Picture 1 (cartoon, protein in one colour):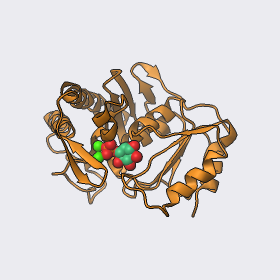
Picture 2: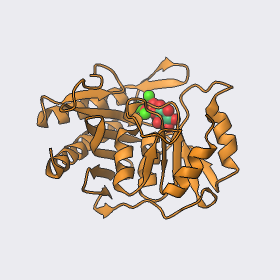
Picture 3: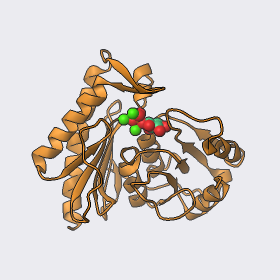
Picture 4: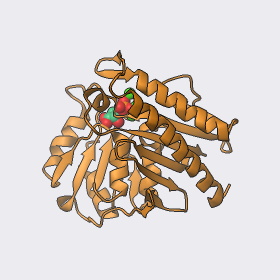
Length: 263
Ligand code: IPD
Ligand code: CA
Ligand code: CA
Ligand code: CA
């Protein structure tokens, strides 16, 4: 597998993102909602988007594995050769429910536990954030680069919380610690869009302790290809299947961010 193949995968990721995003736009005034758990919602738009994304990928690559948030999917492959597509068909379901205009389709082609091609599609703005290993990160035709911030005190941060937050959650302690060290912390309701914005230089640092592979698989490649740094919350190598993440625009911001996260 080489850079040309990863670029082909990225082209299919974009087509699939478009297909899923179209379903989200068609259903946004007429969706039906149900609750998977406390404050954890799913709509028929999530499901329709996943179906459209999976169909699009399978048309091009019938033998690739498919993993998505909304069920009926494969786990991590046991070997290093297989490609698994890791899909969040609607990242930002709670935003979508409230018609808060911030959500995305997130798609990554993963091989040997590494995202090799990725697309985060923002259907409201018709923006494709996409990347292929070795070919850079892009917003439509514009090459992306992370911001030049070197210190937390120059940084705008973002973070993701799980649907239910325990009163003694370390996330809350981290928030209190970090909000005093940076310029501000934004919670947008879409992990994938947070990471796309970090790749685009609009956010300087991000952390999450309880996320899923489909929330971050695409965004991690965007950040790496845009020159940023990713790790787990203690600064060790990022592991997609553990799905906790610290990401930053620079080694300096990353170092400070990790040092302020509780152990
Ligand atoms: C959620 C969003 C949210 C994050 C949650 C995720 P969903 O994904 O990314 O920003 O805080 O942890 O579960 O359910 O909207 O796809
Ligand atoms: Ca969800
Ligand atoms: Ca998600
Ligand atoms: Ca989702």
